[in-house]
Image (cartoon, rainbow, N blue to C red; front, side):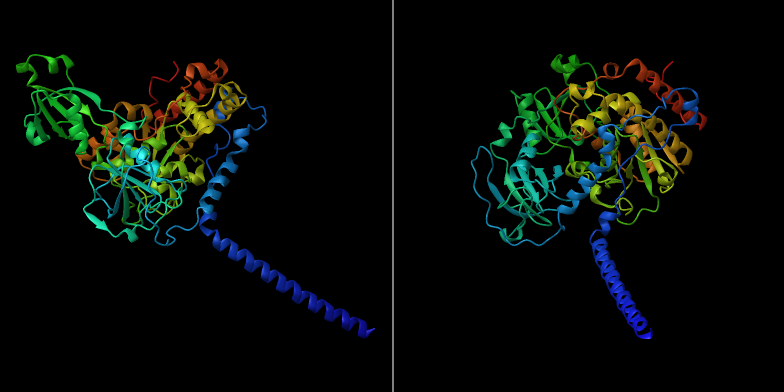
Length: 544
């Protein structure tokens, strides 16, 4: 009996050792996988509606509580985030060294300008700093040239395989051709610079042929400043001076303003002494030569005002962790654009959106808790998510407009419009029922749990850009010059207007039942703001 027992004991010991070895191997493999995806695993989940609506609304009967089948867009929310993460993983490590590439292949002049050379150009003092955009996966020489041609720039510079810059002057320091050794991410065999190096191409025929090419726009008639030659530069006087020739001259020298006074042309920037805030009747600029001498016609040239386009990460970690919080569709991306131009620092994001990174939001790729950005975009609500931040700018917009904007984004991206089929489908009423309560709970949660808040209404920011922007910059504890703020005003729209299609007007999109639901939320939020000594919601959309 002892012998079989001994054999059984020996077998169990061997099995125990084998299980231990298999467990150790499994844990080691899992650890390696976690190390490879450590950065990815830290990314937060996408925005979500925060819990049930306030009890006061339920008691008032403003919300229907019967269960509904989850709409397609709601079930796909986490799959969308997984796709963003997968794209980020597939992108591969950044900064991988590349070998020297052959000279760029020649192409017909109708589609591509000539290759100029390799140059050193980086930092705030870069020469080519107009129309900056990035594309992590599909950057091409032609795509960069077309973007520069749209703004009437002469040169297109590509850096590090993913970045595009525009300008009308060449950088002063040239480099050897072998130093521009990166291939464009979306074009094999092309030359797209390197870190700190630009491969510069002439825009060529695209400058005149671009179908999207911007033109000069009339800003108005203004009194001539007291010292015109000190305020504006490049005076030119011709007997047969035309507006087009003046605009072309100023555009070629990268001035955003062309100013015409009789036969004289001046170029320059908006300044505190010439801020374009006091326009007069246009007839005064077209009157008699004696009267017209006191007034000038101002035109906006196609080129950018680049005095505020330089941006960087914070030189040291931020001591105060600030959120830029809003409901989706409330103008958060536009507010980030304004803040970045005004402060000169990148904004971060609780999420990662490759489309926004390509539009120039370099902070999208930085981890949201790095504290290297001036503030962090978030749509989150709920106590835990809110209390992670030391302070917040709370951006609020008319819920009717916000819902339409977010539904357009869900269906057609940041710059597209939902189709008639989308509006007539079951998705739209399901979307309104779910997201309208989120609009209310988002504001109420931030008012309740936010440690230090600045409430900004989207409509007020549109109407009074500079005063509201000064408040936001002061809240972020950044000092800026008046010239930089005027530059922001010149570049306020950025690349965020929806193009093509048509907007769905709120009065067409919402049924009477939807309006009754949303109006209840508006009253609740308005009352909550006033109870906390904030100004209420703008009267233009508060129901009477």
